[in-house]
Image (cartoon, rainbow, N blue to C red; front, side):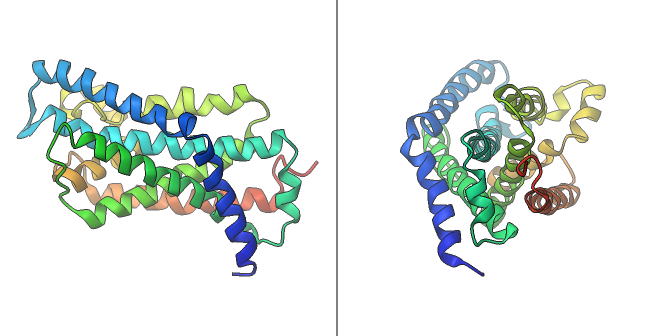
Length: 254
């Protein structure tokens, strides 16, 4: 690494940035998770007590964890890089003695750390509702890291692309949130019409949620190898696309 001190400084700044305002960056996810567990787990769960051999509450917990991870890591980096642009601090990043890969990696590590905090804390909350068993710990950790990488990279890309706050919110409001809810967080794919099943199966977030559900409770509704292929391609392509945008100074250099 060409400049470890600079890399460490930027990574530390990204972590401290969201920790200093934890009531806005972490607390809302705790509250939202608790509400989802109570509302969906104890209302729909009474009408639909089981999905296959799994209780409904146990079925939705992995999806809720993954939803929190996706929205948190995306919001972390999209907001961070946009604020750098908005406050005209981005030039300081460009002149820092860091390679473009080091710069992007530092931002992404900030998103990953926030994602890890969210998943760990939400998992602790979920222990009040189920046993907390994890079917495959290695896969569990792997998916947390890779999905964090995907949406941290996507957050950087959209943060660079956005020219105002309205544009920044377009992706989260009209693309990511609908795809998350259509990804099987609160329902089994077998419970929706066939036409919606087709839409679900071309939704990459479905494969993230499904693989994560498998890692926690050993239940899957998709081909895991296809899911791993899609997830891996997204992780690599989005990371290097973010690096490329920094390299060409996309909407950074005037």
